[in-house]
Amino acid sequence: MNKKQVIEKLSSMDCDIAEVICDISVNGEVVYPDESIVVSLVEQPSNDDLVIPSKHWTWCESIKDFKEGIVSGQSAARRAYCKHYVSSFKEVRDFKTDF
Image (cartoon, rainbow, N blue to C red; front, side, top):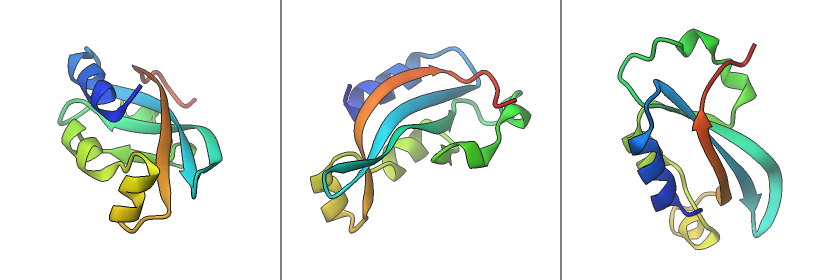
């Protein structure tokens, strides 16, 4: 799954918060497998109190924030001068709870 497909999936979801499961890499090597990125799909999610931010790689406030802030691929990381990047998007699902 690529970033565009993830954004399309997020746009079609019917929930307040989504969770994107992905691998985070540095220099072509996966260093954080199966990490979670939380994405708020509405302005004021009703279940945001169920999220423990430290259990996730990051929390994007909107789909736009995800689109602009998440770096996907090694070449994009080089252009953005960042060390960590998403190397593989694995799953997009409704967020349930961290408890």
